[in-house]
Length: 417
Image (cartoon, rainbow, N blue to C red; front, side, top):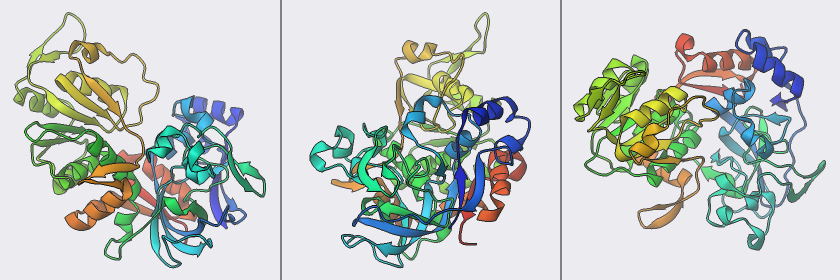
């Protein structure tokens, strides 16, 4: 099968860190660890596994930070390389193992890429506490080999498909997944919507974990799919209050309005005026940027994860506000955390998805996302702005990494084209 393989080495890491900002050749090109090549077709690891033909796979900010070595090394022990990247996956079922009951050959499915204890082949009694609760994003055994035996040995460590040596992701023609990771796609969801199931579920997981109060305004910081997903998820779950979206470009702003934002502001003076409108007063310290007291936002979703976005969230937060971290922040230098303690803020991070409490039942986030997409008929598919065949992956990565020039929001690869 054709697939895009990515390998990591110390020389490539040093080259990427030193020259990655100057030329894409060391991150996406000839000097990188990224190659489109013929690879062996993956085999079913067990009777409850499924072989898939990939229809579409998104390019995520996490993929880009991995390729550019911009991510914190803290998560490195919970992946294994070389790997086929791609964890936002829409696929068709090609083959099912003899014990599979939940899906059938020919069905379109989306893939929960998290590798749980069950996926590793660990018996229920030996599963970690997170996996017993249906929260594999925090699996305690992600850094260990699994009991499942493959032709090359035991299943390699890894927290998610796409960052796993033995479980190729969506940037290839074929892949395998455990039955528990698959969710059928209804016929009335087009491909451009269904391929967004994974990032939308991240946003929904955060909204369900930190729901807004009915009467309090909410601020969503960010212009990407996770931010747009947060706007959609807030409205889809029934929030009717003031929802302010901060987006850099008019195109993203129009989409945020279409998904339910009350108002859109641009970073800088427009966002500042929106803060003042909450009743906040500005004060100028002897040195440094102005600070605020009174007013503020009781709930803020930081969907960027940069130093600037986190500091804005801390400064714009009301006393005892909640700040939801969705931007995969890593190593942020010289972040001023004064308001974290001075305003007694509650900062909560979210990663992945799993079993949620929803309308009196326990449901997987993907199932709830699927249900709400059908019910709301929201235009989330507009997030997919660029589509490329697998052979043009370098052009796709350039478009995804330089959104200002390309105008891209979500870039998708089509392995079968």
